[in-house]
Length: 302
Picture 1 (cartoon, rainbow, N blue to C red):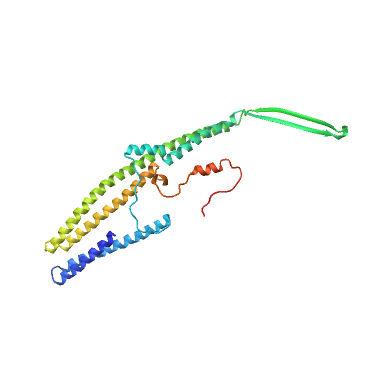
Picture 2 (cartoon, rainbow, N blue to C red):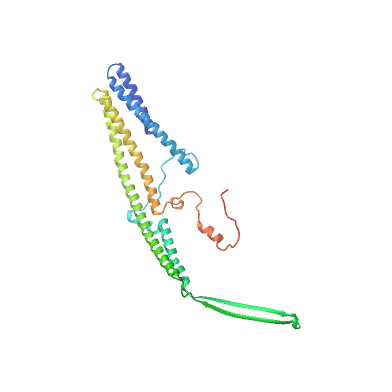
């Protein structure tokens, strides 16, 4: 929209330059400068329209419908401080939790690897009855109960090697927990500082827009009075477009930084964002199948 507005302004500027050239107030060079600025603005507009078309297609791919008229999304409540954000991320970030569960499973794998070194006892029970028709239909009944204790005395070092391997893998998983935690802390800190910095950038950009617009108005008046050149007006117009572009870009980036912060913390969920959608609850499926021995029923998308 800013590029379209800029093209419209520069086209009017070119028309005005042609009229002033026709009456001899300015030179052909001034007209050429206006035409060059208009051509550059038209090229920037074409590039912006191509980018917009690609973004619309991407939006349609992810959302499933045309974007229509969009507004800035309402950001969920953010932590009040960086330390609060780091503390929350350390408790609920899904990457940290997943790595911790993997490490816990690796610790249990050590005990599994030790199992072949432990004694094994087996209980055996047997009962039977045999009919002997050759001896006046005599029946012989028998029953026995026994226990077998076995102990692996030597396995060629394979079991001990497996235990050492399991311990090394558990140590590796523990290191990965630390690595993931540090990566999460870095992401939270980066997002937090970017969000804070963009707030300051927006404040400065608003002041820049106001100042550049005031400067443009002054340059135009001086141009009409003959004390400014066409190039001065074009430069002032470009400064206004640049300042306004900086402002809207910073506003857009601040929204993204806020969601990146929510993602790093672990709050980028439908429940935390208050989305009006059906929230998936994994415990529902778990409770439905935990005691089911047979059956293939499952809820599917129609």
